[in-house]
Amino acid sequence: MNDTTAVASSKTSVRNTPDTTSRELKRNDAAMMPPVDVIEDAAGITLRADLPGVGKDKLNLRVEADTLTIEGEVSIPTPEGMEASYAEVGLPRYRRVFTLSKELDTAKVAAEFRNGVLSLRIPKAEHAQPRRIEIKVS
Amino acid sequence: MYRSLFSRDVFSELDRLQREIQESFDVSPSIRGLGRGGFPALNIGGTPQAVQIYAFAPGLDPAKLEVELDRGVLTIAGERPSELPASDDKAAVHINERFAGRFRRVVSLSDDLDPNGVTADYREGVLHIGIKRRESAQPRRISIQ
Picture 1 (spheres, chains in turn red, purple):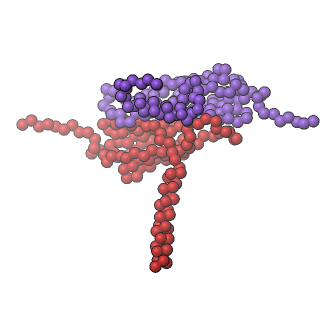
Picture 2 (tube, chains in turn purple, brown; picture 1 turned 90 degrees about the horizontal axis):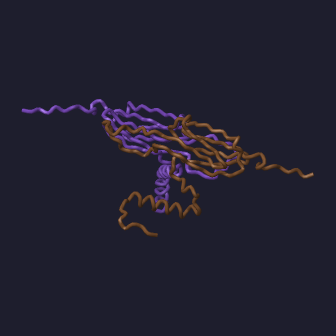
Picture 3 (cartoon, chains in turn orange, yellow; picture 1 turned 30 degrees about the vertical axis):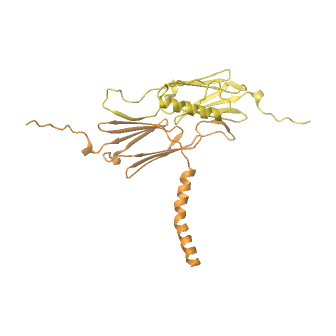
C-alpha cells in the first residue's frame, strides 16, 4: 500500500518536473514590455516596437498558430569593472506577446529592424481584403 | 493637502498615486524630479577612470541629437518625429505607446569629470556617452619610501 503510493507519487513528480522547471524558468527570465504602436489600414497591420540595445542577432520573432512573440536580449558592451550607479532599464530582456486574428496572413510577415526600432508588416489575407459591397436596388 | 473634490480624472489620479509611491521609495528625489519613465531611459555606471551614460533612445537620427556637458550637468535633447498616420488617413491606431515629440533629459554628474574627455556613439538605438574623470581625481597608488 505504502509502496504503491510512493511509486505513484514519484511518477507524478517525474511527470511534473519538466513542467514546473519550465514554469520557474519563465518566472526567472523576467522581461520588460517594449512600447509598441499598432496601426491598421485596409491592407494589413503595421507594428512598431522600441527595442533599444538589442542586436540584430539577439532579436527573436515567432509566430505560432495565432500568437506573435517578440523577444529580444539587450546586449550593450560595457567597460570592464563598471559599476552601475543608476538604472532605468533594469532587465536584460524584452518580451511581448500578441494574439493575431485569423484574417492576417502570417506567412507574409515582413520585418525590419533599424536603430532599435522593429517594424513589422502583417498583411491581411487576400480573401479578407475589403471589397465594396454592391447594394442592389430593385 | 488640498485636492479638488471634483477631480475625477482616473488617469491623473493613477499618475499621482504612482508618483506618491515612487516618492516614498526614493528618499530624496532630485530637484529635476523623478526621471523614471522619461524618454530616453537612462542607465549610468562608472569606473575609476570614467563615467558611462547609456540613453535608450531608439529610432533617432544621431546627427540631430544634442548632447551638452556644462559644469557637470549633462543634457541630452532631441526630437523623435511621430510615425503615426495623419488623422484623415484611412487607418486606425490601435495601440499608441511609443514616445513622439521633443525631449530633454538633464543629469547632474559628479564634478571630477574632464569636459575634454567626452566620447559619444549611437548604436542599436542606444546613445552611449563616456566621460573621463580628471587625472587629479583618479586613484593613485602611493609608493612608500
